[in-house]
Image (cartoon, rainbow, N blue to C red; front, side, top):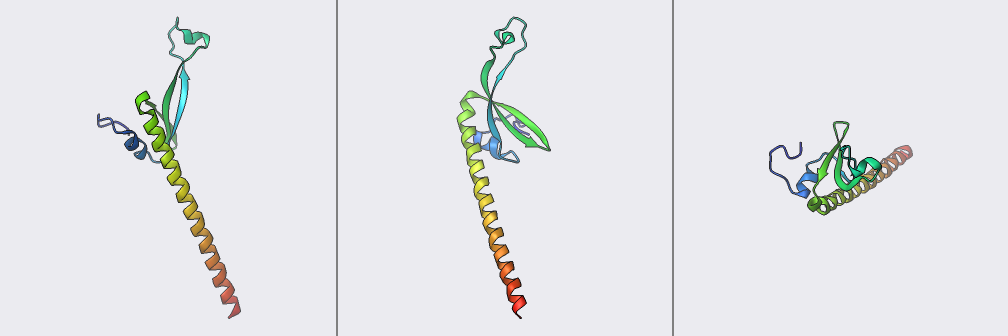
Length: 110
C-alpha cells in the first residue's frame, strides 16, 4: 500500500493514506549477527516504526529518523480529528435522543 509507486510520499501523505489513525513506536532490535553486542542484550536502536491496522492485521513500517517528527505530528493531528469527530457524534446522538423523548412525551399527551 505505502510506497508502491516508487516515489516516497511526505510524512502527512503517508499517515493520511492509512485507513485508521496510526501510531509511531520506538523499538530496540537484535540484528542476529553471532558476534554482535546485541547478542548479550545491548540492543540496537531505538528505531522508529509506524504501526496501523489493515484488513484486521497489524502492519509495521520503518520510519527514517528525518521523518519521525513529521509523521508523529500527522498522527497527533489525526487523533485530534478523530476525537473531535467522536465528540460531535456523541453530541448529535444526545440531541437526537432528547428530540425522540420529547416527541414520545408529546404523543402520550394527545
